[in-house]
Amino acid sequence: MWDQGKADLRVPRKTELRRTQRTLCMVVHGPYPLDPRVVREARVALGQGYEVDVVATRQPGEPAEEYVEGVRVIRLPVAHTMGGGAGRIISEYAAFSLLASARLVRLALDRRYAIVHVHNPPDFLVAAALIPRLIGCRVIFDIHDLSPDMFNMRFEGRRGADVADRLLKGLERWATRIADGVITVHDGYARELVRRGVPAEKLTVVMNSVDEQRLPSPVRTSNRGFRVVYHGTVTPQYGLELVVEAVARVSSRVPEIQLDVYGTGDAVAAARDRSAALGVADRVHFTDRYLPHAEVLDRVRSADVGVIPNLPTQLNRFALSSKLFEYVALGVPVVSSDLPTIREHFADDELRFFRAGDGDALAEALFDVASNATAARARAQKALQRYEAYRWPRNAARYAQLLNRVTSQTRRRNV
Image: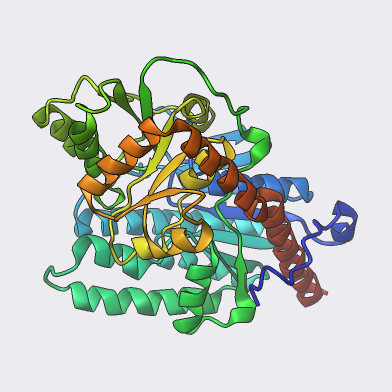
């Protein structure tokens, strides 16, 4: 059961794993090190004495193989790109999955992995672990997002969408059955997965909280202006255009307002065009190059407010983004869409909520923070207190215990 309240949160000692085979391979359709979740979990495995390999995509200019902070990164000749139609997405997923399957067979025969840890999307990437599973590897499936809901959000109403939805739900059931352990990011996803048929005892919740050892120190500055920040993936459902519109609406009342965007994605161009059309291009600043996560957080920490503008879509009802935790951990006041999962984790006296998808409501929320800085800081302090229950060491312990349990099963099977 994923019940967090009853979990033993002690991180197992390396000596408890001494007689087991401690080799682990993560497979992720994306660049490494980019997704902070994958990086955090790899560090936990290293700390538990595992030798960690990561099979990832390869972006232009990256080496095919290198070590990154003790993790051996093996990059396949597929570049991950944001956006595009269903055909392009499926072809990229399929190409990476085929290459990962072939590479993982060779790696597993050589390395004799105890565990193959597959990150979604896509769910069918679990197929890369099938042959390693036959030779004794255990499989962990890490559900970052619900794939059927992601597809529905982007392609609902299009020809064949109903058939694709049924297919994706079938793949989700298959992937969770193949896995010896299933990880997901919060209780809301866990409840939904149980409703869809995943046994509760298979599930472990590892939240997207922050590895605070990697955070810069919070800082309050006396810089001129009122700085709004958004960082992370920029796709239509995350509502960056809504923030641009809100900045335009409130600019006459908060003449010093500016918006800094640190992120890439298929909605950047639309947000940039929208800022120009609304006459606030001089107030909205985009990074024109990739910035390392640590550098982004260093820039974010001095902001006056961080925005979570997620639109009220089917998938976003479950959204609990890592940037929310990062804002809170850095002491940055947060303005957030009022969506169910965020509301489940934070209250009105901790975040400044606004009606999801409503640009006028977002503009009023930004004005409220700008004109009531003392109240905004008080909410940020209460949010930080609430965050105590979500801190990364608790989640790292759950992941470490899952590794311990699954590796022990591997050892017993191989005896």
